[in-house]
Image (tube, rainbow, N blue to C red; front, side, top):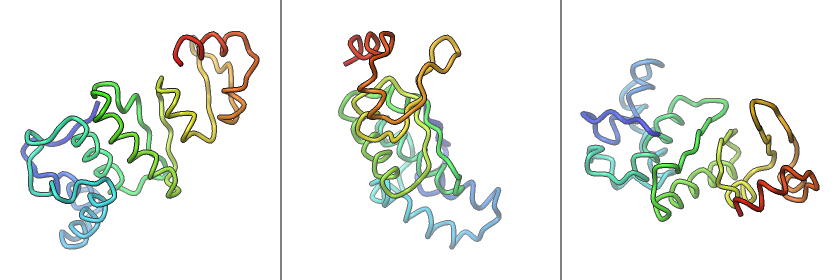
Length: 155
């Protein structure tokens, strides 16, 4: 689930961390926020408030806001779970674009087609235990009966 500050505009949401935590100037934070909003396809929504956005747009604002802090890795926990399929595709495209541009990302998901397209590594957990840790290709070609059953059920 995403979190955005409802009383701030989209632009202010993205600027908040860098100005308050990193103590960068408002001008520098604004430039960075505009670049990030462009990256997630929301520069045209910069002056709107969250209540004016769709769920997918709010998720992308949250992604831009997190990126503004320049993390080494982004962690997503089921980033599309509360979205309808069309909005989910918007968010997945942003995550895919970020992955292709070299941003380190960890995605917890049951969205296997997305994982197949984007992941370079898959860690499969069951009952708190790692039962697979390897390349995406090896996961989808695995002869492990449990993984085969899982794939059959979800694909």
